[in-house]
Length: 498
Picture 1 (cartoon, helix red, strand yellow):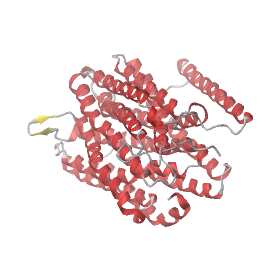
Picture 2 (cartoon, rainbow, N blue to C red; picture 1 turned 90 degrees about the vertical axis):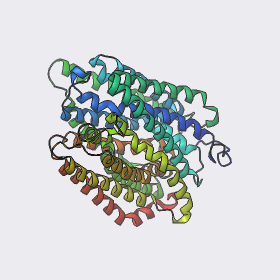
Picture 3 (tube, rainbow, N blue to C red; picture 1 turned 60 degrees about the vertical axis):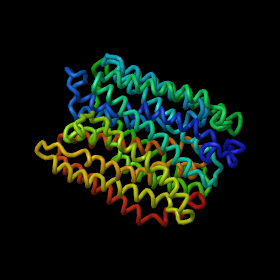
C-alpha cells in the first residue's frame, strides 16, 4: 500500500484559524476556480437562449438544456481520468496547475466573438475542471492525519472558500455578460482562473510535500505497466476522437447536442457500473476496505440524486428567474444571473455554523449517511416550495424573488449536510492507494446528477412547471426517507472511518 504523504507537523500546525497554513493556499485556489466556473455557469444557459440579435446563440431551451447538462456533467466526469493521472503520473500539485491553465484557456476561447470557438472552449473548461477539482480536494484531506478531529471542520472552511468565489462571480460576470456584452462575462471568468493560478504558484511552500509526487509504484514492473497504460489510453482516445470526427465530416453520423447528450447517458451508466463491479468484486481489497467501498456506493447514489436537484440552479432555476421572477428591488432592476449568488451567500453565512455544529456535537455528531438523508429531504422540500411558486406564476405573473431565495435556503441546508461531508467521507473511506481516483468517483456522482438535471431542464417548456417541480420534489423527499431507514447498517459498514 502506498504511503500517504502528509506534512510532518500537520497535527501541530494551527496557523490558519486553527488549521494547517496550507489550507489557506488551497482555500484561495478553490476560490478563484469557483469564481471562474460559477461566473461562466451563471450566464451560460442565458447566453445560449438569448436571441442572436442580442448577442446570444438563439438556441431553443431543449437544445440549450442538453448542452448545459452535457457540459456540466463532463466537468465532473473528467474528474475520473483527472484523479487517475494525478495518482499515477502527475501528483496532485501539478494536476491542479495544468487543470487551471486549461480552464483559463477555455473561457478565453468562449469569450471570442466566434461561435466556432464555443464548443472547443466548453471542452477545455471541462477537461481542466476534471484535473483540478478532485486533486485540490485530495490535497485538503492530506493536510490532516487520518483521525484528526479538525478534518470535517477543515473541509467546511474550504467549502466556504468555494462559495466566496461562487458568490462574487455571478455578480461580476453576470453584470458584464447580461448588461454589457456576453463575451466580456466569459473573459472575466477566464481572468479569475489566471489569478488563482498565480496565487497557487506563489503559495506552495506551506503545503510542504503534499501532492508533489504521485503514489509510488510497487516495483519496476508496476512503473512500466503504468507507462504502457498511459500510452494505450492516449492512443485509444486519439483514435476514437479522430474516427468520430472523420465519420461526422463524411456525413455518416450526425453529431448534435441531443445525440451527444444521449450518448453521454450510456457512457455514464457504463462507467459507473464498471467502477463498482471492479471495486466490489474484482479489486484486491481487505475486508474492511471492501465494506467501505460499499458505503462509497450508497453515498454515490444519494449524492447523484441530490445534485440532480441542486445543479438545476444554473439551468431550470435560472430560466425561472429570467422568465417568471420580478427582478426589481426598491426600484433597482438587477440581472437574473445575480440570483445565482444567493446560494453562495447562504453558504458563507451558514458554513461556519455547520463547521462549529459538527465539532460541538462531538460523539453525538450524526453519521455521514444520516447527514446525506437530511440533505436529500431538504433538496426535495425546496422543489415542493417552488412548485407552489410556479402555480402563482402561471399565466405570466412575475413572482417575488423571495420564492427562489427560500428555495436556495433549503438547498443550502441540504448542501451543507451533504457536500463538505461527502468530500471528507471520501478521503476517509477510500483505500490510500486510490485516494484521488475515489475522489474522482465522488465527482462522477456530480456528473451523473448534472446530466440528469440537464435532461430535466430540457423539459422546461415541455411540461407545466408545477408538475415538473412537484415530481422532482417527490423524488428527492422519497429518496431521503429511504436512505434514513438504512442509516444504521450503512454506518456499521463504515467501521472506524465514521
